[in-house]
Length: 324
Image (cartoon, rainbow, N blue to C red; front, side, top):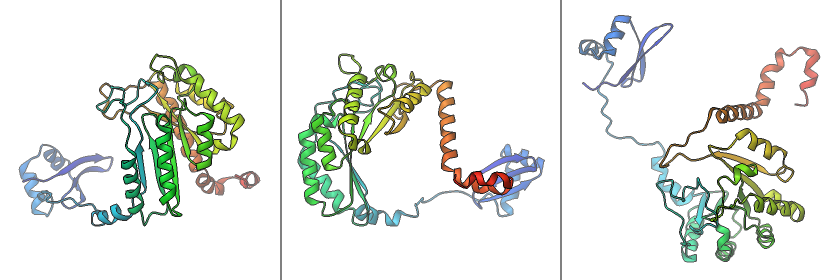
């Protein structure tokens, strides 16, 4: 016998979930206790009633499996191009710095022939996709600006009116005026890495000699705000909150800093996937994180809350909700 079942209790009684019939059965206390001990006589009794059948799975098939080939041939939405494995920073938590079961930084770059093949594949396998995306990544992709420009030229040559979003992830240290002007001209969206206030950013995001990168990034951002304000609509911030980072302090930095006031900021935790050692955050971090998550849920559901509550709000107060 190979039945698969789960016993559980509620205030209302004793139950078993039977996977073979996908049903919940109410039991008396004695039957429940016997089943928890996997009593064979009790199992035979329930089997005689049509429950607890054998659960040998011969095949598991997702309902969309039959469409997989069609999706792969016509519905691909995004291509990520790793221009180089080289980087001008040595961030302590970077997955390519040796702390993960992953590759390490190297001098490798992807040949333009391979980039073109990837772009061709995306365009030829996205016929049913209304909008496609190409993302440039590294290492630090701005170390390979000539290669990036060659790839962009090829994209523009073959895109033929396709709706396309191009993004690039950078540490921000190489955002020269020339590069910014190029990104504005080509409409490239840039995701810049900045971990919050100077003390926290410079604790991890450093140059090979150990100097922090905060000051040069803020200098670049201040210059962009002063001389290329239109580029701010193409720029967003990715902030990695390390275990020694004060989340509340970083949040206040992004809220209060005048350079950041118009930029979208996404905060992320250090990835635990394939890490060689444990990554542990303290209770203060989780308190702030949960509180901010709750605020987000409230904002996303605000209209729903108003619709639910409006009937019980006294009439003299209802007029105050009309503009919410």
